[in-house]
Length: 142
Image (cartoon, rainbow, N blue to C red; front, top):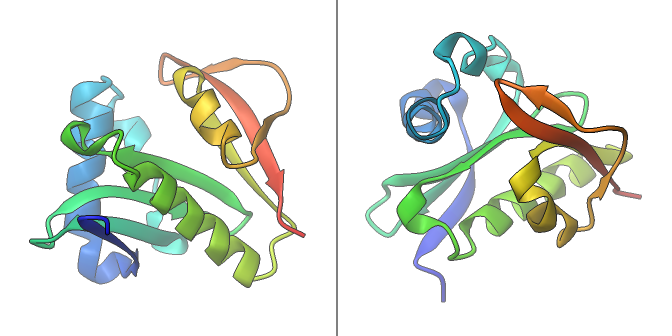
């Protein structure tokens, strides 16, 4: 049994906890500038949060209205324990439940094998975002 849970977050209630994970992973660890991280889209997204048994936020992700999964982040000490996969499965399930035909994302190049394990395939050419190599990926949901 995993020592964490995944749930759909409420942005108005969980904003600080979601931002804390993203700030630590993207801004501090990966050097993403804050003005790129806080893009103004969060209030219109569906968010997922991973919590440990003490209800501390350990990971997160979001689903945009157009079917893009993004801002997938897991705290370093929780990586390799299934948190990212559980978050991704939750978000893909939410996209499928609302009737999206496909899920899309921009994967950091080093994370491509992770997303491939969940049925995502690369589409298009590699590109750089926030100084980090990425590739667009998608997965059919129907």
